Length: 423
Image (cartoon, rainbow, N blue to C red; front, side):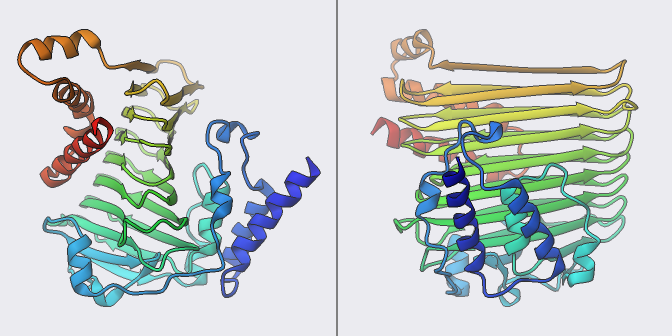
């Protein structure tokens, strides 16, 4: 055991010392917390089904600094009208971004401003390492009563040459009564690169009273990429929030959505769609605190696992003692497309208040052979029948998306994955 602890400490030290220098008291604080928590192993309950063995192969001494051109950005970006904010290897690139939009203001936070940021809702090792390693924190501020006409597009590009790590940190503040759509997009500029590399992200969304937020996270990295994302959402009174996460790529992808309902009469939707294949591992986690009464929440999480892939879902709803009239629902449904695929699900409730309505449920199964046979009798080939049933399974999550292009992108990604599996 002592040898394992020594090895894990060495991994963390090599990782952090690959940075040019410390970034001040804020980074020092999170670095200290990361050391206290320790590098996770499968002996930790929250990492029981998610192994980091391959993570050790990454060479953190190599840092990629190549900046793509505007033409490269246009090829990588999603094809819909947005206000684009570009990051390359976690760093904000102002010359490639829309920084003159009247609907919001962008600033890089100094040390004093970072010290005033809210504490993480449900921190863990990789969150602390992102906070300690990110070279900058971008603050995006939306004014009161402002309706942002176009989605704000946070394009995070992991650029060649690969290797090492990149860390991205963004803090979004919404004024009272504001309305905004946020698209968070992770992509690699060379999907054929076979070297192991890692990215971490931390997006904090502070939603004020009477505000509305629609958030979408799209993960489209290479097959050898490791990504650990942490989103925190703080929600005020009479606010409405929806957060949708689509995990479509990477060797190991683990995403946390942590939320607090801190004002009465607010609502949040948290949905996710996870598509691991080959030997990939995708781990999706939600943590929701109902801290005030008369709030509602709805969660739908679906996993489609194929080949020898593994997926994990862990969801927690906590209801505080004074959060009366809470109404929270969480559902996780999983589809296994092969005998070798694996899904581990753990939905949880902690209720400390009376007069609440909360529920959770999970199901896991294979394709229904009778449904496949029925569609075959109607003239479809077996592969077409299986794809149609799979699309129908995922549609419940995709149909929650208000932006047509993203909804279509999700459905097309399922078709592509299915064609590779069937091929």
